[in-house]
Amino acid sequence: MSQGPPTHSDLGLDYAEPEETQVKRCEELWFDDGNVVLQVGHAQFRVHKSILSRQSTVFRDMFALPQPNDTSDWVDGCPVIIMSGDRAEDWEMVLSTFVYRVTTMSTTSLIVPKVAAMVHLGRKYEFGRLYQEVVDLFIVKFPNYLLAYDNNTENFEIWVIRNIAGILAIAEEAGLWSVLPVVYYMALTCQRFKDDLGIFSPSLNIPAHHLRCLINGRIKLCRAVVEYKFNWAAELWESDGSPPPICTKAESCHKVRSKIVKKAFDQLGYGIRQALGKWTETVDDSHALCEKCRRYGRRQFENGREKIWSQLGFFFFDDDWEDMIDQDTDILPTGWRT
Image (cartoon, rainbow, N blue to C red; front, side, top):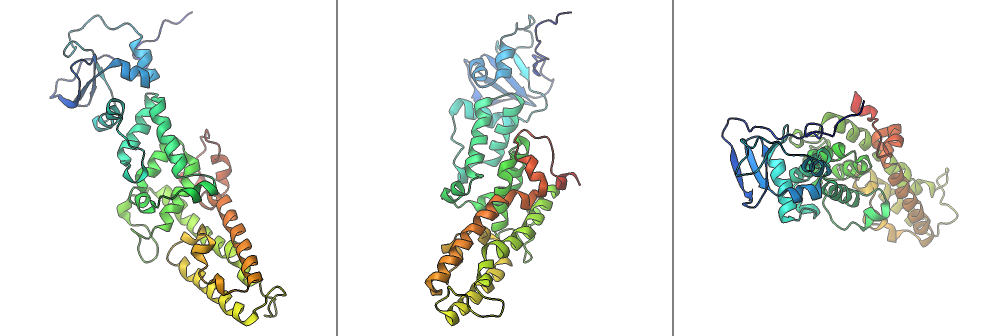
């Protein structure tokens, strides 16, 4: 038996009678020449069908259907669509983006609730370009390539930690698993909103499942910093304490090596910024090493840095990361399910 054409309800939207309550028009998004009214809670927006249709396949399909014959509940000659389950402030932010093309994509000026609204409504109503704009931004700002991370000159760790709960919620709703390790790492490198033990302040409202990943990752990153990036300082010396054949300044290099290792351990108590820190940023005393020791040390250091980057996701998610790399996976990390 053949099915009839889709109805408004099939599309998740409906022309319906507004509730008998005080309704407030949003003046900035109430256009006299608009031809449809969206009601979200107690707020109404009068906009243009053409704008919604251009942005959303859901609205495009809805407006292609025959309109109800009963126009008694229309407002100013416009049909009213009840947006059930949505928040008025989300629609105000998204509609402003459509109508005024408000720039939202420079990182440090990003309004996280607005980006969250773009993701939530973008997925729900298939605002393809709007949703993709956020996805592209997150992929650029939280890259999965070390070179792209190095070339990102914006120092916005403080912005990340201030907005960490919102950023994590956006990434989680959008299924942007690939950005989470870099977001976690940036949060760990920032000392603000932490106590002396490096514990995040409750005021950040970080969900428990993300906190478990952060704690798990921090422990493993600390170990990796010593093992991958600074193990060369110990390898330069023979087991009997004698200098290696490549060293040309045995006594001096021994002192410098000890100083470098001590500093690496001391800094681990304040954060793990050095996990992905560059040689010139992390090893201040390298100039005091002999040329051969310095070349060897830097090569091992850079190799260790690349190794840490390649394993960043595994530090936070263990073996689950293998499955999470697939953007379409529905499998949640083990740490999120406990």
